[in-house]
Every structure is written in structure tokens, then in C-alpha cells.
Length: 279
Image 1 (cartoon, one colour):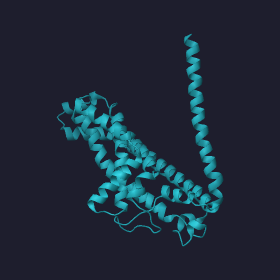
Image 2 (image 1 turned 90 degrees about the horizontal axis):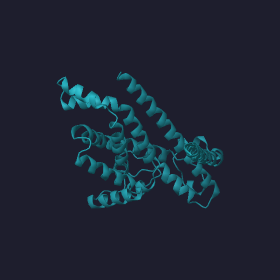
Image 3 (image 1 turned 135 degrees about the horizontal axis):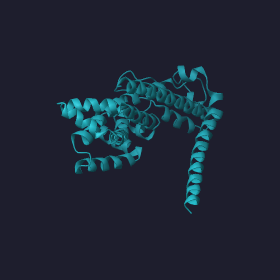
Image 4 (image 1 turned 90 degrees about the vertical axis):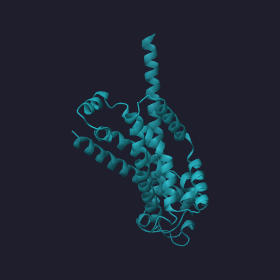
């Protein structure tokens, strides 16, 4: 009976894994089939010109630059907040204290809130403060979106840090701050993975920046100017009734996929390099 159950669950796991991989490969196939014919040098080197969304010349350099600037700023803001919070609830407080558990529960709830809610909340705050849709508004909204991801991801990794190492550091006369520096180096691979997850979620989200970042056909030169993003560029192009413009949306999706892959490889590379340097 046990062997039968084991075979059934093994078959289910293999089937689920195969299904997920097949769906992923199909998505890549659709993007490549529809996006590659529309891909050209102008797509990545030019901003939209007059009539771009009617099938005329131009590119999406404004959206590429806007997405990169926005996710870079959002990750900086969210990491600056998330890392101290995760370290505090794990190593300053007791790991299973009431406050730590309440904080984890709160971040789990924030994790599940739809991104459009963060966008609406950011838009409401911007109205109260008299701030127009801008690059900084989008950065803050995306940072709010990915903070729960970073905190909970780092928190899960922190659970595997040996308590003996912390106690040994304290027994040598180290302060809590010095102990946190040691822990931080141990957590570096986990922090890298958390940032990778946050980048993937933040750079591909359209609902958060729809109200907060605005949209423009130019590249922003200051934080107070509106900024275009690739998800919104894809959305606007797919909304066009012109087939050529719709195919450009798939080319933009291909560019976004490549950017995420490049950022993933770079994050992994530097994360592994930093984790080796601590030995």
C-alpha cells in the first residue's frame, strides 16, 4: 500500500512539474513567434515618434529606460527598509516572540494584497501630498509592493542561520551590531535570491505604476517627471486594433523577458561571488 501511494504521489509531482515547464515553454514560444518578426534595432534605440501606436516608426527606449530606473530605485528603497526589519525580528528580538510572529503574519497579508491596491494607495497618498504622477511615485509604489517579498524571503533564510554561530560570536564579546554584520554575510546568498524575486515581481507589474508613474514618450531626466514602463507599453500596444502594433507588444514582452533574465544572471553571479568571499 505504501509503495502504491509513493508511486501515485511521485507521478503527480512529475506530472505537475511537466505541466508547469510545458506552460512556461509555450509562453516563450508565443512571445518568440510573434515578437521576433517585429523586433528590430529601432525598438531598443528610439523613443516613440508621432503615430507610433498607429503602426508608424519609433521604438520603446523610453519604456526600457523607465523600467530600469524604476526597479533600481524601488529595490534600493525596499532593501533599505526590508533588511533591517528582517534582521530585527530574527536576531534582535526572539525569533518566535509574539511581536515577531505578528509581524510575519502582517507581511504575509501584505504579500497577498493585489498590486492594484498598492497603486491605488500610492495614488491616494500622492493626491494628499500634491504630487503628480512621476518616476519617484512609481518607485515608492513598487517599493511598497516588493517590501513584503523581501522581508519574508530574508526571514525564511534567516531561520537557517545556526544559533551556535550567534552565541559563539556573542561569547567572544561582540556587540549585537557586530553579530548582525556576521549574520549579514551568512545571509548574502538568501538576500540575493530575495532581491531577484523582488525584481521579477516589480519590473513586470503594470497595475502599481498605472496611477503613480504615469506615461510619457520621452525618457525622464528627473524624479518628478512621468516615466513609461515596459508593462504599460505592452498594455497600450495590445489595446491597439492594428495588428502590427499588437505584434510590437510581443516584441516588447520579449525585451522585458531578456532584461529579467540578464538581471537574474547578474544577481546570481554577484550573489555567488559575495557568498564565496565570506569564506
